[in-house]
Length: 89
Image 1: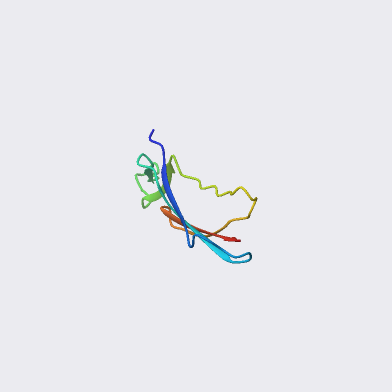
Image 2: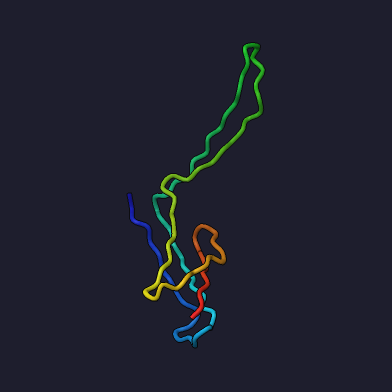
């Protein structure tokens, strides 16, 4: 399996105490695979239900954000490839 990749950027290079800091992370994994399972139920008379689909991701990604000051980072958004976290300087 391939290793995930990530890049990160802060909204500024310097902050005053109390300033909002935004961290944007772009991430991916080339071998993450979506899976769709389709289910149809058929009774003894041959009557069948409409197809029902469920999805899952094989090898999902999890983001963890920490820094060396113990600051709390709160997720603002995450669309599965770009995440934004907020911290306070």
